Image 1 (tube, rainbow, N blue to C red):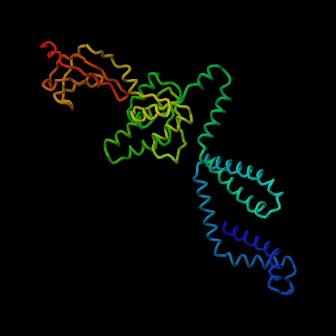
Image 2 (cartoon, one colour):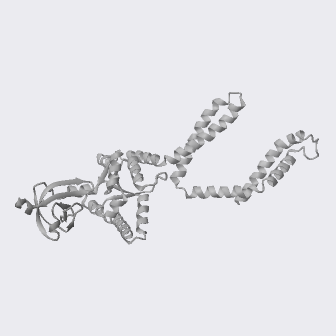
Image 3 (tube, helix red, strand yellow):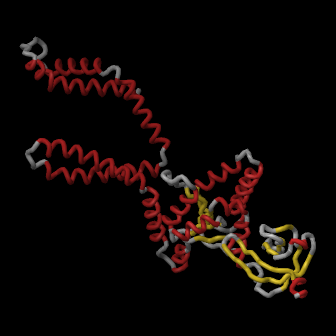
Amino acid sequence: MLKRIVQLFFLIVGGMLGIFFIPELFKLLNIGDIPFFDKPYTLAILGAIILFITTFWLVDYIVGLIRWLEESLVKAPVTDVLFGSLGLIFGLIVAFLIVIPLDRIEFIVVNTVIPIFVTLLLGYLGFQVGFKKRDELVNLFSISSRMNKKKGTEDELETFAEKLKILDTSVIIDGRIADICQTGFLEGTIVIPRFVLEELQHIADSSDVLKRNRGRRGLDILNRIQKELAIKVEIYEGDFEDIQEVDSKLVKLAKLTSGIVVTNDFNLNKVCELQNVAVLNINDLANAVKPVVLPGEELVVQVIKDGKEHNQGIAYLDDGTMIVVEDGRDYIGKRIEVLVTSVLQTSAGRMIFAKPKLLEKAL
């Protein structure tokens, strides 16, 4: 059917060209009047036949191009097509307004070549701007619609004021986010981007057993948050095709939505701070609720292994906090009393430095 339409188009165009240009061609070739060729319909038929024969080999290529364009448009997300088309229309309107004054200039380059160039250029730029800025435009329209809907009561405005909490892959795999949501410490709407889900699925399909188990646990955690917990969960379907790294996409999404990135990735935490993006690190929360240990306090620990530095021993509290015991290598496998000397706390965790109390007594 499409091939017939293209052939019909060539016939119609050939007929129109035959009516206007075949008489001029006869004059150019000094051909006199030929019977039956002075009628418009005869010229139309002749032009249609000539163009159809000369362009017969082009039909299959044009049909293939149209089908490829059709498949590309069908596969493309509706937001890409919509905002690309709006940008193209806006660019053509601007080009039309610019070209109007040029028609008054009686110079062939100005009133013929420049309008074509301006139309093509602004149409292309309009399409590219609409296509590449689609996520920002979608966010702008969604914020406007939400603000219009939430102009009712004060409670609704407070609900809108709550920022979105955007989860990254590491915090989903970690598993503690579900318990935090269940306790009610994390309020507002939980946003799970589609590109995070794809990375999580890729990890769950990994050939490495450990990675595969972590990925499947992450999917189970998401299923629990969405179905069992009384918290609103939304899936962000958009993507940033010009950005490769998932962490960079999260930062971009947080900027566009004014949301908060929830993570336990130390490096992502630093990147968010550098780019002025709000971030919640659950390691910071875990450290905040741990018992406070001050220098000078006494603890009873079991030294289980040697440390990195010479003559050091390593012990752990019940909550997993690591204790570096100076001169503790000789006490590996024993429970001893230690005296806390200093505490180092970062987003990566808390570390306690201590020394055996037995040495303190001996001194």
